[in-house]
Length: 143
Image (cartoon, rainbow, N blue to C red; front, side):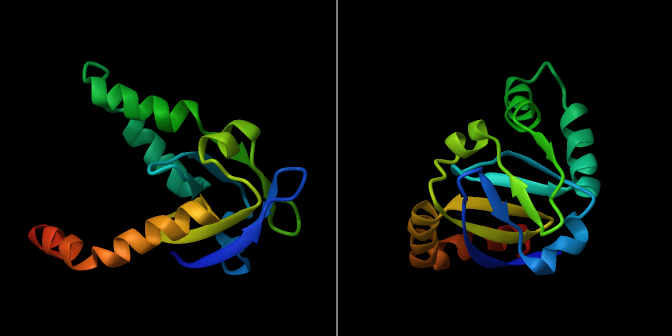
C-alpha cells in the first residue's frame, strides 16, 4: 500500500527518486503513464497487470472506454529503478504533467501520483477548501 506525500526534484537527466518505503514494492519495475488532473500515475508491475487487463477488456465500441484505454495504455512506459531507487521519466510524460524541477510524489493506496509541486499545492488547497462538499458527495458511495 502506498500512502504519504514526498517532495523531490528532477535532475538534469529526468530522474526522480522514489520514496524509500515504496522501493520494496517497486524494485522489479514500475509502469508510469499519463494520469488524470495533469499528473502521472505510477504502478508497481503486479498492480499494472491488473489495471492493463481491465483496460484491455473494455468494449472498443464505447468511445469513452477507447479514449481512456488510449490515455493509459499508449502513454505507459515500463521503467526499472536504478540501484538507488531512481527512475527516469521520459520527456513526453514530463511534458504531459508539466513537471519542471520540484515535484510531489503522493501515495494513493494502489498507485503513486507524480505532480508538479506548484500544481499539487493548488490542487491540494482546493480539495482542502471543499472537503466537506466532497465528503457529502462520497457518502452515497458508502465512504
